Length: 68
Image (cartoon, rainbow, N blue to C red; front, top):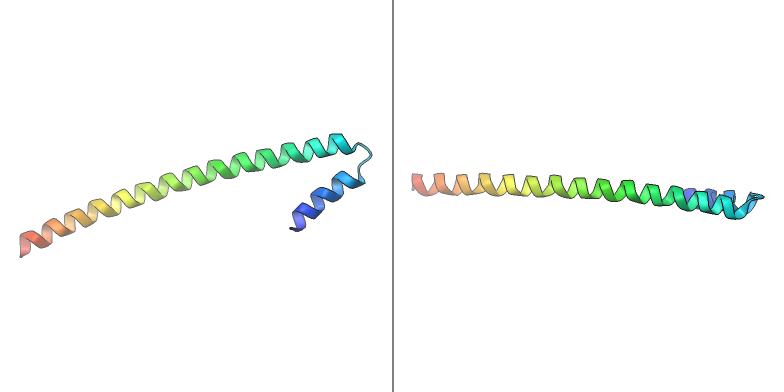
Protein backbone atom coordinates (compact mmCIF):
# COMPACT_ATOMS: atom_id res chain seq x y z
CA UNK A 1 0.00 0.00 0.00
CA UNK A 2 2.90 2.32 0.79
CA UNK A 3 4.39 1.62 -2.64
CA UNK A 4 1.07 2.53 -4.28
CA UNK A 5 0.97 5.81 -2.38
CA UNK A 6 4.54 6.59 -3.44
CA UNK A 7 3.67 5.79 -7.05
CA UNK A 8 0.65 8.09 -6.99
CA UNK A 9 2.70 10.82 -5.32
CA UNK A 10 5.27 10.66 -8.13
CA UNK A 11 2.51 11.18 -10.69
CA UNK A 12 0.75 14.00 -8.83
CA UNK A 13 3.95 15.87 -7.98
CA UNK A 14 5.35 15.67 -11.49
CA UNK A 15 5.17 18.53 -13.97
CA UNK A 16 4.80 15.95 -16.75
CA UNK A 17 1.87 14.04 -15.28
CA UNK A 18 1.09 12.03 -18.40
CA UNK A 19 4.71 11.02 -18.98
CA UNK A 20 5.12 10.05 -15.35
CA UNK A 21 1.82 8.14 -15.29
CA UNK A 22 2.83 6.21 -18.42
CA UNK A 23 6.21 5.40 -16.88
CA UNK A 24 4.49 4.13 -13.72
CA UNK A 25 2.08 2.05 -15.82
CA UNK A 26 5.04 0.58 -17.72
CA UNK A 27 6.76 -0.27 -14.42
CA UNK A 28 3.63 -2.01 -13.14
CA UNK A 29 3.20 -3.96 -16.38
CA UNK A 30 6.78 -5.21 -16.13
CA UNK A 31 6.29 -6.14 -12.47
CA UNK A 32 3.12 -8.01 -13.41
CA UNK A 33 4.93 -9.88 -16.19
CA UNK A 34 7.69 -10.95 -13.81
CA UNK A 35 5.23 -12.07 -11.16
CA UNK A 36 3.17 -14.05 -13.67
CA UNK A 37 6.36 -15.73 -14.89
CA UNK A 38 7.27 -16.60 -11.31
CA UNK A 39 3.80 -18.04 -10.67
CA UNK A 40 4.07 -20.21 -13.80
CA UNK A 41 7.47 -21.45 -12.63
CA UNK A 42 6.18 -22.26 -9.17
CA UNK A 43 3.16 -24.06 -10.63
CA UNK A 44 5.52 -26.16 -12.73
CA UNK A 45 7.59 -27.02 -9.65
CA UNK A 46 4.44 -27.92 -7.73
CA UNK A 47 3.19 -30.16 -10.53
CA UNK A 48 6.58 -31.91 -10.71
CA UNK A 49 6.52 -32.46 -6.94
CA UNK A 50 3.00 -33.89 -7.12
CA UNK A 51 4.01 -36.28 -9.92
CA UNK A 52 7.04 -37.37 -7.91
CA UNK A 53 4.97 -37.93 -4.77
CA UNK A 54 2.41 -39.97 -6.71
CA UNK A 55 5.20 -42.07 -8.19
CA UNK A 56 6.70 -42.81 -4.80
CA UNK A 57 3.25 -43.51 -3.38
CA UNK A 58 2.62 -46.05 -6.17
CA UNK A 59 5.98 -47.72 -5.45
CA UNK A 60 5.16 -47.87 -1.74
CA UNK A 61 1.73 -49.36 -2.42
CA UNK A 62 3.29 -51.97 -4.70
CA UNK A 63 5.89 -52.90 -2.05
CA UNK A 64 3.20 -53.14 0.64
CA UNK A 65 1.09 -55.44 -1.56
CA UNK A 66 4.14 -57.60 -2.26
CA UNK A 67 4.96 -57.82 1.47
CA UNK A 68 1.41 -58.82 2.40
